Length: 191
View 1: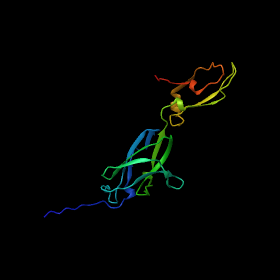
View 2: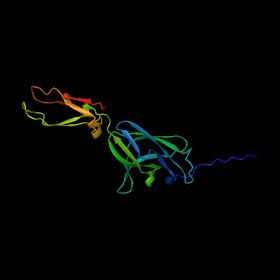
View 3: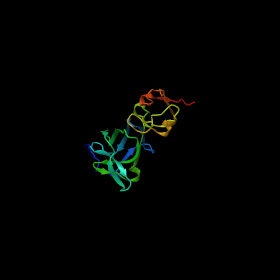
View 4: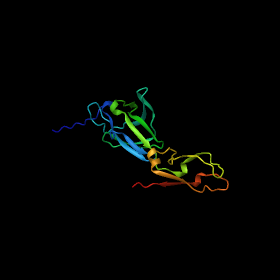
């Protein structure tokens, strides 16, 4: 006589759960998608397969040492093997620490606090801003502050700024104004 036993995982054990990320966390460009995996286990280290756990992401509040505001909108897809694929996109360049929550309970062990680094996307001349006095008499010095930005309005990184050259053309205008349309972005090629 044959017997079979179907063993189901027990309740979630947050201490056993973790995200599968590089040790440096996630680095992505603004507006581009990134993904990672969250592994959900029970107290016996069994993956919680055949369950439908709810995964959420929150910023980590270091002052209160607990979860903070929701990190953003993410798509969470169960794999059926106790893991969940999390796919997201952020448009604001920033650095943040985050934690995940399983069924409303946030994991906040030191090994469960992850780093998110969203860097600016490519420079978009259409979104650059120009400030300063753009009126001058002939022979007068004009100082303009040109803020290089990506298509989401993020100020571009120092490295992006160093790799780019801004030239101003068409300054011999009758009215003496330099408009944003007169800026040309050229990328310097490193040797």
